[in-house]
Length: 185
Image (cartoon, rainbow, N blue to C red; front, side):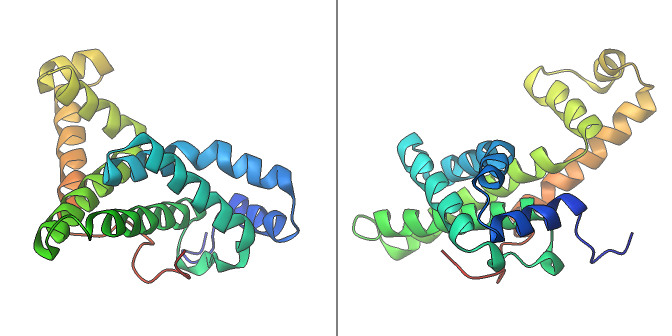
């Protein structure tokens, strides 16, 4: 498969949205609403605001299906980028009257890094995510993780190392598709 070729599902979804198929929007919502909401909540730390961002993102997708450029990445990345940009925009709007510009930028950077970390974790392969969840949330060491996953200790260490390497990029790299991707909301 050529790297620039988007998955078939993404191409079909864009075509269906462009034709105005309401069922396509429902399917897209079912697939990505929790991602959009969690990214927005991570940035805004408020359920009501995250709900609003979720509505705005899917409204934008419905009204602008051609804004998705398959050459720039997957539809998942595009939708995540829209959510992140809209949440940061709302955060800046809400905080501009109450905090200094420096405080606001620090808050945006922290929220963006947290949102990127969430995105990285939800996007990583299931075996890496499972190892990290066992080690972090259940406080398992690599031996216990290996036993719980039914893999060798070397494999458990490899999964934990790779997962942590991916997570370490959260502070340095933007979410795929968030930088200059398509039109903003």
